[in-house]
Length: 406
Ligand code: SF4
Image 1 (tube, protein in one colour):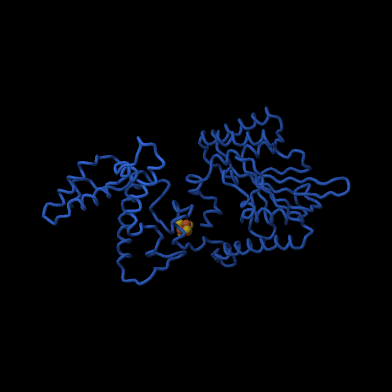
Image 2: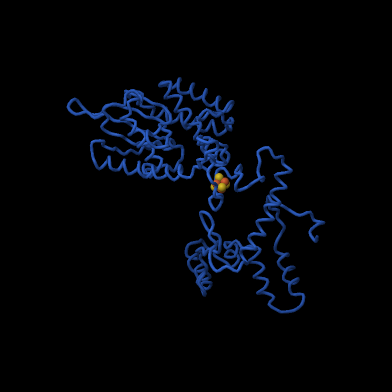
C-alpha cells in the first residue's frame, strides 16, 4: 500500500470517499491567502476563478494532474469557503503568511500538508510573545475539539517546530515563543486552539513524544522497503513485500493491486472483462465461504492483519412473556394520551408494528398449525391474499432463467 501511496497512484478514496466539496473550499482559501484577497469583490472573484478552474481542469497535487471535479460539489465548496471568508476572513495582518504548502520534517521521511501558517506578535507594550499559528481548515460538520488531538495535528506541529531551527526556514519564523495549533470548522465557524509554550520543558517533551511516535511509524514503513543489489555495487529500492490479508478490505489501492487481485481489475479492461471477472469472484467467494465455514477447525483462522471465523455480535431479543406487557401498554398507556376518536385498537397496534412478510408467514403458521400434506400451500395462499408484489432493485450476478436447472 505504501508503494502505491509513494507513487501517488490512483487511490480509490478520491473516487469514493474524498470530499470534493472540501477540496474546492480548501483551494479557495489557498488562493485567497496567496493573493492576500481582502475585499468582498476580490474574494468572490477569486472564488469564481478557482471554481471554474477545478471544474474545467481539476487540480494538481505533487506535480500530478488530477481529473476535473464535479461542478455541484465544487460550487458548494466555493460557497462554504466564501461564506467563511466573508464572516471571519483570513489573518492578513499577520507578519508572515504561508498559504497551503508541504512541510518536510528534517530528520524523518515525513511531510505534513498545512493549510495556513502565520506568525505574529501578541501582547502589549510591556510583554510580547511571538506566535506561530498552524491552522487546519475542516469542511466536515463534525470537526470539533477532538481534532486537536490527532496524528495529523502531531505531524503538523513537529514539522513546524523542527523548521524553527532550520537555517533555510521560511522567512519570519524567528524567535518563536508559542506554537499554536488551530482547527477551524468551515461550516460552524468554530475554532479550537491549543498553545504549546516552547520555553516550557513539559510542552517540549510532549512535542518530542509525538515526534518519537511518528518516527516509529516511519520506521515501520521504511523497514519494509526491499533494497537489492541488482548490479554489483548498485543498491536499488524494490517494491515492498505485499502482505495481502484483512487490510485489503479497506485498502485504497485494491483496485490496482497486483499482489492481492492479479488480473481482476485493470484500468484498461473493457466492461465485458470486468463483468466476467465479477462472476468468477462471486463464485470463488461463495465456494471459499462454504469451505471455510464447514472446515474442521476449532477456532478463528488467523490471516495477515486479522482473522476469519464466527464472531458473536451482540443483538437484542425480546424477553419471554413481554407480549402481554406490550398489549397492556398499547391499550392502557395510549388510551390515556389519545383523544377518544383515536382510541387504540388491535388493528392500529398491528399497523404500528409494521409487519413484514416474515411476520405474516409466522402468523399463517400459527393460524393453520395442522400437519397435513398441502398445509404449505394453504399458508402460502393465505399470505398471498394479504401481500402484493413489489420490485426491489439489486445489482449482482444472475443466472439466465433457462440455465437455472443446469
Ligand atoms: S490490496 Fe492488500 S496487498 Fe494490495 S496494497 Fe492493498 S493492502 Fe496491500
